[in-house]
Image (cartoon, rainbow, N blue to C red; front, side, top):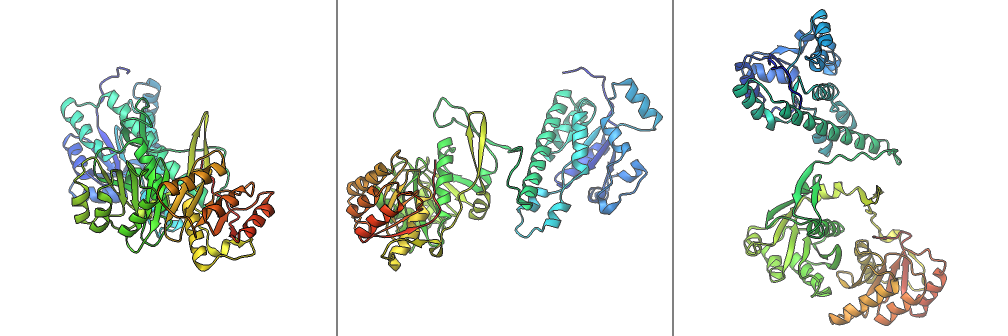
Length: 516
């Protein structure tokens, strides 16, 4: 980097929303002979700690106005931040206008993200927490990092002080690092505001996609050992690992799939996932019962899979699961007795999930493609009985209707083409991800036979319409008595007639659940 003349650090501007460490930082700057200017709440905190500090109004000669909305947006502030002290013309203009440089800036922004996370935050409160002067000062200082050292993260205070104390200088390389942090921070801040405002006006289209996510962690590798991988965003704020080795790329993908299923249920529920598809899912009077029912769907595939539940996992449920080799167990919490048992397997990961944060976070679905990104609304539609259209002569019984609704909830989470058989409380057989819907149906029946599961009296769910009546005939041969499907095929009448011929009750949802 450029070699610059040694700089004398004389003045600092401190204006922070997050006041972590700011008193010690300011005190040590003062001890180093640096004059401090500040605003509002920060100034009050520093004066309360007996640290000499001047108001920004003393610097600008102009009072804070409009309820504090305008205080640092002034030439005497921004000239001080932007002056190139190696430029003779800049120095001349500064002298003519009686302006001085501001050498250190410590600024962080109004807590928009924290306000956005509040359940009861009003639109007006969110608008007032959009910082204007802060980002302007940060960006100005970061642009002029060769002469203005800018600190947006309180974690950097100590290193800044170390350099000033030992070298009377802040190295240019470190200033560049601080500037990069600033632009990363302001980009994320603006992205959050843009996302909120677009949602507020219910904007359906956009000419640009702006995604800014912090690096959460480096992963050991991706789907395969030869692929490098990283995790970005707030995943670790929703899923907190309390035991076990580091999560892999594939673990994270499967955790995402498993957790989405348990959100479908209010009653105690368990989902067992392998390669993003459910091996089994069930509800029960308690989690132990729900797990046993889910596991009964397929007692082979869950080996090395992932289990998710929607209640605190107690000892009874832990005992039911413990003998099965699982990569990950996910629950809102774990009882102490359950943790003591499950942590006996050191490689098993235990993950606590914040179901409220999880539910709020499922809004958009993004997929990478060559040369771009696809965006769609998340498939969060909740189908209720009143949404269904009975299209056959025979209506579903009460038990069949409950089973159909259960099947439809799970079908949403099975890769297309998806065919699943269930009763009202558990999956019985699952056929997933086949190129032909008939093949998915055949595989489901074959797996039921392998697991000695009787499909007599079951119901069937199909994620998309039956293009022909052969799927209905397969269902009848397997023993299904009711079917739920979207409808919409040009051969719907043939399909409905086949159902009537076999006395199968059929309902249309009008909504499909393709999952690629």
